[in-house]
Amino acid sequence: MDPHNTNAEAKRCLLSHAKTLRLHTGNLVNRARLKKKCPFSPGEEQIQPPEATVSFFLKDLPDTLDCNIPQATDAVIPEEREELKVSAKLFLFESGQSSIRDAVEMACQTLAVSQLDSVIIAARRLLGDGVQTLAPLQPAWEELEALVHSQRIAAIGTADLDKDLLEQLYNWAQVKPSSNQVNLASCCVMPPELTAFAKEFDIQLLTHNDPAELISAATFREAMQEGTQHVATDDWRLEWLLRYSIIVKSRGIIKAMGYLFSARKAEL
Image 1 (cartoon, rainbow, N blue to C red):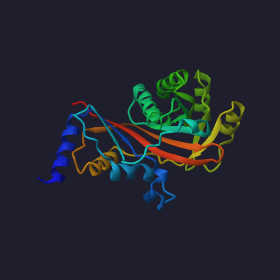
Image 2 (cartoon, rainbow, N blue to C red; image 1 turned 135 degrees about the vertical axis):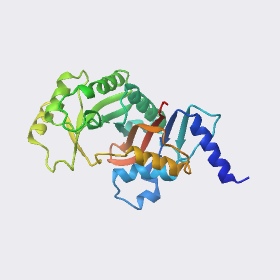
Image 3 (cartoon, rainbow, N blue to C red; image 1 turned 30 degrees about the vertical axis):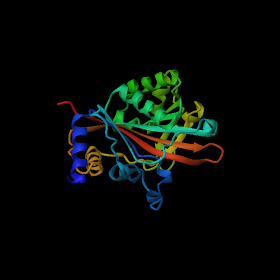
Image 4 (tube, helix red, strand yellow; image 1 turned 60 degrees about the vertical axis):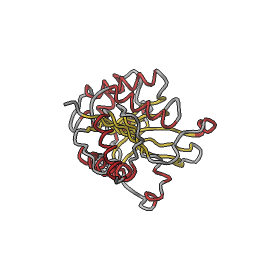
């Protein structure tokens, strides 16, 4: 019997029964293949690992498939925790407050920490272009606030909010945003009104260079097909993506950085 065909059939059987798929790229900082390409774009960082390194751990037809690359985890050693800053940026592809909690819980479990120091939510994915009302973001922010109250997250922030939306969020929120990321592609200089507001209310302004679409649905399915040897994946939908980083506080060095994904099979 051809081992290749047997393995493909096992994967096909697993995917047909599973309802949720979770992926962990592992620490991209230590991956020599990616180091040779540095500097690389965020899009390259996250899409190449699923294509090349998805590894299924065969179980008895589980509802949830947990996939990661076969290497040491990024678990934080308890003795080093105070020396490290563990932060994350969350991209939601489907609405649902449970996705936020699932992503944070998976990050804490993967990194072996009881609390993330900061979580930034990619607000524009929820608000859409040109939207100047806070309503689409509010349910997600309330879930982040609940995670702060339960001490799963220490501080929460946003990305790509202009001064008006950031002011709306600050005035409405119980837990105030500690930071707001600004896309370098959209402005070379921080808008003066945004800078003034952030300074007055002690909100840290950060920069990022994430593309408008970090990963498309089609690209994700293509990555799954390549990683699973072309098993059909058309009915799988990406729920969320979380990028984490572990930084040595005293030196500002990135010790670890990687991605966590969750996808769900569409209900027929």
